[in-house]
Image (cartoon, rainbow, N blue to C red):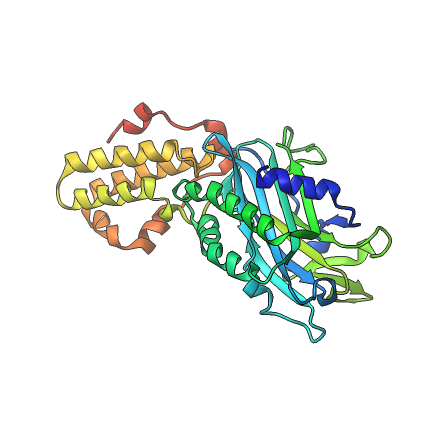
Length: 360
């Protein structure tokens, strides 16, 4: 049984009462906008996990946050595992011994292709004195998987890491204490999205029965779940909870770390500066070809990035002083600011290689 199947089974069998509460702009300061295929990127993060000590404390029990996201990448469905570093769970404790964990990525930044996105996230009580040793051994690999901007470079880790997570369950008799499972679908009409359409924003998962929490009083402030009491708010405690955030953005801020097209682009500028025009042309074509099919870009950015790289190359060709900036990453990043809106670029389509070659 795969880790996805095992987690689904655990969620299906779980009888814990829980509340799932989404937050609109009035209660979180952030608009819940539909995430549009080939226009937006998305990233899911466990913003806050609050654990009351009494629920897991025991001689050989340890808390662990496990997540598994299923999304489309490079034309295929991929499962992306995540594990919250157990040692970090103990870095922030209240006087009562309650534990607060913050800001764990559950997915890297991904271009949204328009297929369904599934998320399972849960707090597990793991039994066995050797659990910490086992999990520490794989944590650095999970961090690598979720931190790289060019996911294809780390995707080979995903399957063995998911298998490693499954081994942890088998070896430590994992029991779910609080969990969340949902599946979101593509936005067909951004003006009238379905109830389960993928949207940006915050939502809380609280271990409580309906009526135990005044849901309308809940707020998100400074990435923390709080509850209003009159004109003020205070941290929401007393109930175990997870606060999850889905981020949506129309462009990346790490384009220079996508080496498949950025490295040959920089090398093309170096070649121009050395007067090797034929080699420069070959390198810029390599860069443009990689960018227009990059699995790490939306169609909107495949269009914008290729056209901007071409413009920068032509500018450097006409002004060798610009080409000399190849080692000045700050100047190049400034020059890489993308023109127009993602929506307009998506509508215009990705230029063909013949179109990109014109004028080079």
